[in-house]
Length: 449
Image (cartoon, rainbow, N blue to C red):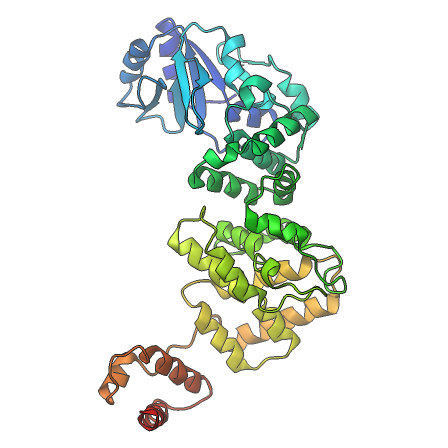
């Protein structure tokens, strides 16, 4: 493994002080798998106590500490490196972080690795000997693309590991061996995942969605009955086979997110785009008829999305909600040869929330995520879109009539102002001048009064 010049100096200082350096965690696994790692380098230091390690690191720059309990330190001058002492953990509560931690600088590595979740994550790199230490068969499991727990008794102590298994499946295209699968299923049955915070769940879901094959992780969560209710409902929602020969809504959604993963570098908000693709049809269980029609499922989806608690960012929620609402519009407009005015209206509805580019691509993913696609329909869609974009652009037309204009002609600041401005904008798109719009609105609303 390669390290920066400064990192090597720090490692040497640790060794000179009587310590011993092992690299552990994801960076070792990724090196073995020839993956360009985005992980921090986890450095496990043996044979130095907390105070001595702090003293050694302090020679280089300011040391950030995270409490003696965890014995984790970071150097201000060496970003991306975490230094920790070997430790053992024992579950003492139901929450993800409820562990009793025992620090032992002289802990045998055979015992130290027992707290690792999976064999591929239990690999250690002996910095001084420049060799991989594999005490759990992780190298063979990586070669065979198998996810296997290190220690069944300790694996079940942390419910987050269920979601970690799912994201590793998606990221590395791996399968779960049966014992680990059954352990994950047992943890779900014991309602252990209910003790995870929304923040933790969201982070793991993001890793699944940003993987090369997101469907693998979600199929696993389906098979162990760990999906949230709004996704689980998709598995029993049928569709018209002439439109969706792939089957239920969940199967369709899995096809959509796998296609989305292939093109997400083309969109403006990749992560939010993937979330929108995952959730675009969550309204279908509420409205699907016996014959498989799902009228207004986009509007129903917006309502269901209110119960998706794990997404907390207001900006991301606005993006996803807009995509759910309008994911069918462009494809329907193409099929119906809709007018320029309808396209311009749509630009106004999504303004500041979603780009046309992203809406185009979710429309494509939705179309392609079926058992079969008529090529001519897909080609016609792109022809329609390119015509609209080339002539009308991708930005909403600036409104001629503003709220100040309405106040100047005698309107009062009321709840009706928004409706009047919407009418004025629609008239503008149909070619009316500002003066005629204002005159017609004054005439109409005086008559109503």
